[in-house]
Image (cartoon, rainbow over all chains, first blue to last red; front, side, top):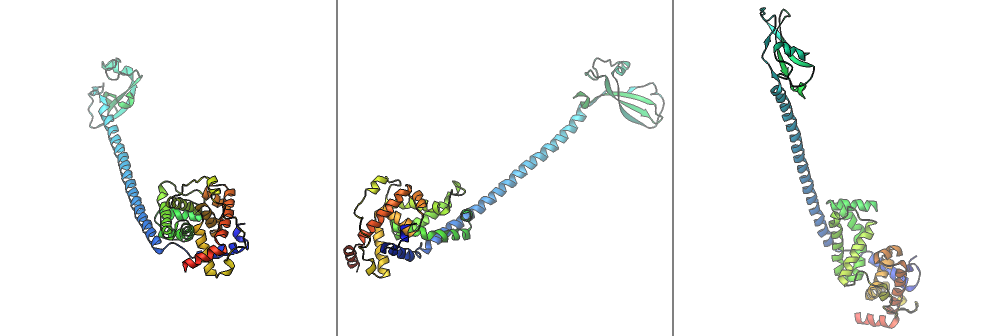
Length: 160
Length: 190
């Protein structure tokens, strides 16, 4: 309990002062000046928020654009790599190459590596330096189902 | 306390209504403290600088530790001490030995003979004439009804020191309010 709570003349006098002082306060101009400061802070806050949003938008654009560009160039690069790295021999005639045919289609097959020998390509790596047991071959088949020609393929999928 | 902290956060972000609420809650007690400690003209400046400080400290503290009132009083006290030129941490021993003149008897005052208005004016004047440590104790604990523990934290001293300063302050006040000096003071005023 504070001393002012007792009933001495001094305590009563201090209570009277306290009651009278209850109305004392800073002059209105102080609140006006402080509110101006608060308003200026509001402007700064709005500006900062706007700049943050703008920066975030820019960042999103840059990151998004970069990702898109990387994906795009990657796809392009993958396609290009595939076509650029696929090396083929000329079509080599097969026993039925002399049989006439009006149309034909090419079928890609895996054939034993020793098939290279029968075309004089050998297994020493003229077509494919890898030591796999099979190599890729495009076989030209006529509309009668007879194989007319073959070419050997070295593709990236096989190489890598 | 939590609400005041939120109000402060909103005020710092530019919310005028939040600031006005905070200002209305604390400005009177801060003003009274400053007015007794360094005069009414300076009190306006102390209140303004205190609120400016709390608004501008957002970079350093998201929210003050403890009650907003104590935080505001801490800033106000720092500003007051700078104004009246008192070192922030005055040695307690020096203060306690400052004066023994005030060990007067409680009954010997003129207060009962005066009107309320005269009493208020004379006591105000007597409080303003007290040495700074005693004045601060009276203003905080008696006129602002601040609990001793809070006053001790604010005044950066033990709670026992607050009690002894209050006791000494009351004695000094009684001495100042003794019949003859008061009458002389009144005559000078008139």
